[in-house]
Length: 518
Image (cartoon, rainbow, N blue to C red):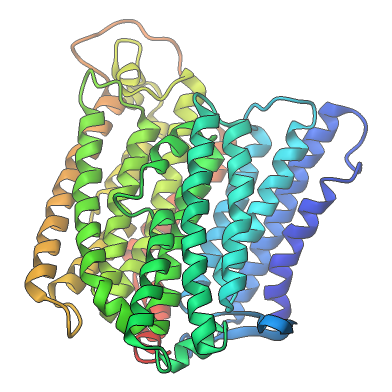
């Protein structure tokens, strides 16, 4: 299994390198087609390897790190090439491989427009490099390797937004890279402090020590630096302001991967690094993280309500981006509770958000392709979508993703938010229960506001505006390549909602292991 895990990382890296070689032919159009097909083949092979990894995973011992590789890499500073997966990282690796493959499949038929002849080859090279960084983030077990993988992701995503995006794409890409690089620099300072004081960067060794050898002040300073750096990527309020612009400008597949995977890198780091490595510092800062999470839940929902009202000229992609601020607030609240229930809820909500928001961005991207805009007033106006009557399959998928996002029982969005609030209701020892119960109440208010704005969106886009009846142009319904790309996300959203033990059975033992001294 360790060879499979290594191959997961090497295969897309070799694929990205191959796009630099003149192997796709001299004819530009044919080379573009071959490059896009090559991307689908490589990401499909990575997905197959991921399935092999998941099938070979010992589900009886999900708390044990499996498929491990641990060899010296840079002896001078003690950095090791240490890889492995457990019940926390495995679902995220599967999610990353699946979303990347579906995005490659979608891009083969719907490549975002980009300037220059080698557009498809450049897109594929950056896309595969992005996959390497995302997978490596969830597989590495060394703090400096984690930082390196974290950084690898930023450059390809910057160019995907700046070159293949739309609207104010360059300013949005600049804000994205500025925020995330500054956050990463602060995070690196925390890693260096831990490594310098503990004498190792190995995440398993640090988790086993569970903070021993690190003074309380060292833990608080390191936890603060790491928490701020990861909160930018999460994104936590008030460090979220780069996200709406990035999502609004990004191409469809960029938005899918940004919401479905990149945001999870921040919350995964909080669970993998903060909880077991600096537990005392995390306990000190947890109430503040919970407060920011609760404010983010309400703030994101209110922002979405403002964008959804008639006449606000709200961009539907921007609205979903703000909804991610609220949904990821539940993840942060569950982590801040420092309880197995809350952390399990956070990890479940991570996967659910990736599936549901990925589907939402696919559908909204298709609407924008058909109309040339994602403006909500246009989509619901006299010449608007009215999807139920004009494109019923497209409308059904949008409505399904919306009700899953608002947390309808029986769908994936329900369990993570419920468990996160349960964790806040009874937080870990040493945390103020009245404060966390207040956070839980605010989160509950956020669920009501979430239902309000998502139902407004469904009503306006799927039913149209009855006050402005007028003849409307033809609208293409769900296309075959769209159905192939999106159906797995809808099916998994239903499966996770009906069978939550599929994920909780993996994460629960691993979470208890980390919280108990990892």
